[in-house]
Image (cartoon, rainbow, N blue to C red; front, side, top):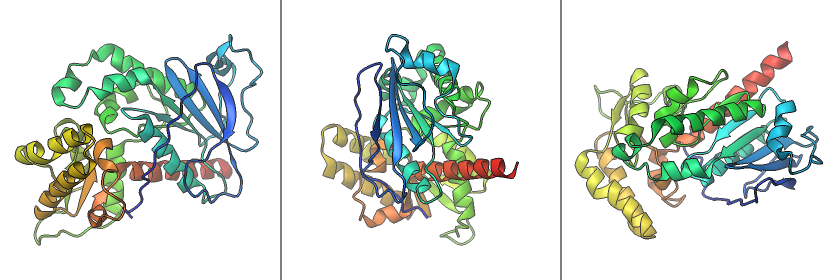
Length: 330
């Protein structure tokens, strides 16, 4: 259940005001019989990746570049399917693309691939990249930062999205504030993970105790908090690394990554995981882009780890299938 992972990354760079089509090959095994059509739209300061099913009606590409794709969307949305997903990119553009790859892989087993729009803002990424600690996050100029995020929700809604997701652990710190302006479903990482863990019917490792779930994040206070709230509401006991473990494993692991010492970072992560497992946790949530794909795919410790983006992707597919089925029943 928790073994799915994708260890690849794709970087897309296109000039502003570019609109075009290409075949989407995300280095995954696409089992769908039909090829996917993709439209790339770049509107400063955001980059947008649009996926549709083959033959789907798209905005007229003959519109002059001076009019801009944003003006085109004011007349009609980019996508019109009831199961269209809007994806807000966060700290890592690669993470958003990896999540999109997960959606493509999961939805390709059905009748059609899931339509989605990605909005990835380099200005937002720059702000979030410095948000590695509690103080740094709290020092953000909150009003314009929040307005920026809310504008992404509006943009994706006007693009045709019927559901919003954020494949970014850090952004979920402000999920409740962002969702205030969202009138469509806005999935939460913590909810998705907690729901899957509840359905897994895990048994406590230690008799007489609750099922314990570990959480590893670059900031154990802010990011782990929303996981803790959602998991505790489902009856789980949440175990976080203590101050000593953070100072001697997680923080040095991130520093090793910065120095490009991958093997050193991996060894430190292994120690952090072992410390949590000794404390009786059933599984560990890797709540950080830096930690999520650090270990090689064949590392046995990964069998005890959860990628929350997998849970978010599966919940997104469930929402899309339910929405599609509801439309058929009308």
